[in-house]
Length: 251
Length: 250
Image 1 (cartoon, helix red, strand yellow):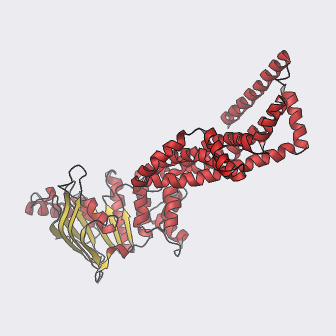
Image 2 (spheres, one colour):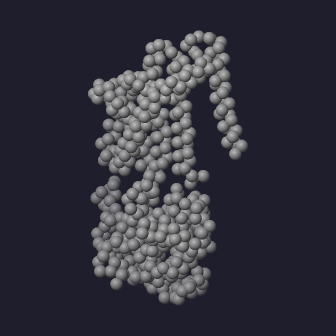
Image 3 (spheres, rainbow over the protein chains, first blue to last red):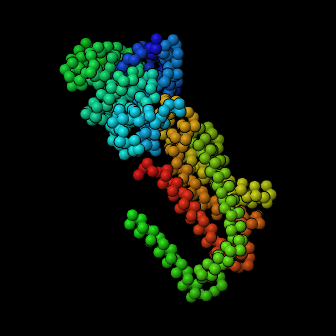
């Protein structure tokens, strides 16, 4: 009974120049995510995906509604990890320190950080500063950091954008491998439907703002899937045929 | 490596050149008010051996250190508060501008008048002169802090001490080092004035005494000793500190 339920009545932003008419980013948003599920969220640009993730992560608490897990326990208390659109590494710490910094003192920092960085193929770069690494390597450090905390909930916000396709593919594979080794619930935001089909158990399509859930589609194809495979194309075509303008946030 | 050695060599040569100029001009003019560097050197040696220079130098350095630490500590704390909180910034901003523009001499005189000719008054006067500068620099730094990195600390529930020392403070390093370097240079000059006006020991007091006897040789000897110490602090403390803090940039 560790499902995550997200019920947001309303999330609005006050516009300082126009206080009368606040911008409503999210309204009547209801979503249930099963424990251990890989759930992708797709929505048109500006529909409030990042806002939603911030609410789930507890970075923004100004909303009405509830985000809970199990029997009404606040998601805030879950052990969470967040992989942002950019790697957000601390430039003054080396690769290993960047992972260790988010671990607490009861954990075997040295052992854990080395373990996850080796899985990411970074064992030779432990003492490198982030500015010496390529964009793809920086994201691998961020991914290692996310899993090192052994999160119960992992949130990823378009983590592989602005990478070239082979590197992005490698990272997607690494993400899935880590997830198999260390199962956790994942919420993954993307605008790339192929990526979503490749990775997820469930894809959630969001509407234009004020954002709500348009449609949930389960992907039951067996893993490992192949990114350039017909099956993914077929699923994609089927979804888009049945729901022509779903990527624009309309039904 | 050769580039570094070269630049060091050039610096050394240019310093020696300065001494030679001084020597030539002093021997041409041959007046009492411009002693030659050799006279100054012998005087320095004498004052060093009888201990008086060391005594006054250490007193002045002690005052510099205490007022520097006080000014940095208070300035950094207020600067961070003002940089992070618009309300506090609005309240304290005009005060800060006033203190920034009161002449050092006025603060020194007022401090002596209000708190007496005491050590405390001297330290307060010096610190008050520096604090507004520290505040202005650190506030700028606090405003420029990258909130994205702080969010990382929040999501992973990093504890407050770690968040401050590893996520927040390193972002202020360039501002801290800039204000510390500028601070120490400003502070030691003000300390001398404070000593001249109301203390009975320290370099400033001695300079005043030498001035009354027109003892230029001693004035130069004391000044030289003090400048050497301050340059040493810059080179053996601030430069390595700066290098350490910026290791990741290279």
